[in-house]
Length: 360
Image 1: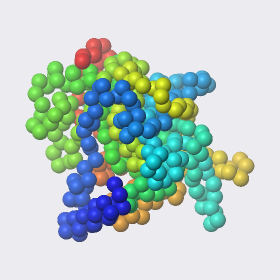
Image 2 (image 1 turned 135 degrees about the vertical axis):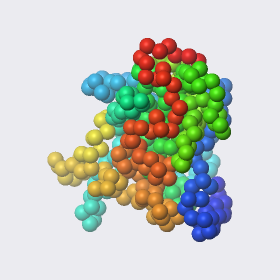
Image 3 (image 1 turned 120 degrees about the horizontal axis):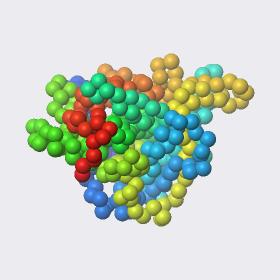
Image 4 (image 1 turned 90 degrees about the horizontal axis):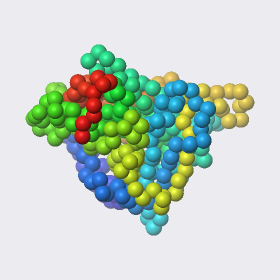
């Protein structure tokens, strides 16, 4: 989108906001787009992210892991990171590279954060979902970019992605979620066996829905299943396709249907515990550490003033933050609410049965 188009879009949003309020604006910018790619489209992974890509893979040499990190490593994603076309360079290429946060102190003595793209890292933790009173294991991952380099009001220092895999009782990936770390553009993807179980259980779609696992939730923003993800193995590794510049998730698939890896440049990343972000060493201060987040759980220096002006009724819109503080779907739900899957999806009973055989 060029500068003139952005001005027109922002003017339109501003007029809509003044006449109908933020409530209407959120529907004008509905982020839950259904993935249109077909299986054969993934034969050339870079095309999913518009032609150029950097591949990030888990580091196979990282073996000094505790039991939690070993489990998290089984679903640590392959990331196909889109890169801007070389003939249309609008920002520094490094803005699309994944890295490791580094803490410093500014001239006023306040903490500041930079991203060292020479150390690709995913920060991970285990979470829990509650379905019909029973716990399901969730594997959560966060990765950081130096900045959000595009957009009229979205540009800013530090950007990030949050990815979560929810396992069924048999240990298979049941659902996949991706959100930007500010809470924008949250999307849900469902495993093929879960959709097949839902079809068997419920027989009919709910009114207005296109997937059997989709649910009508009155008085709330309904979740749209962006795509069905194939692969019923317990260790079917997910693949994230991330757009250049916007850092939105274009698609999620599993590695067993992917082809065309050899023509992509590769980098490996390490996995670390998520709480590492709470005690990062401060450069030039030996033995001192600080949190990447301020007392409100917001990344130091990540404020998006333009978004705060446009969406003034929301809580620090656009500002990347701690997982515990991520509010999604226009501040309607919190990332760590354990009831999200049960509330917003029509889950089949087999999800809770460790002996259930997967269907396709």
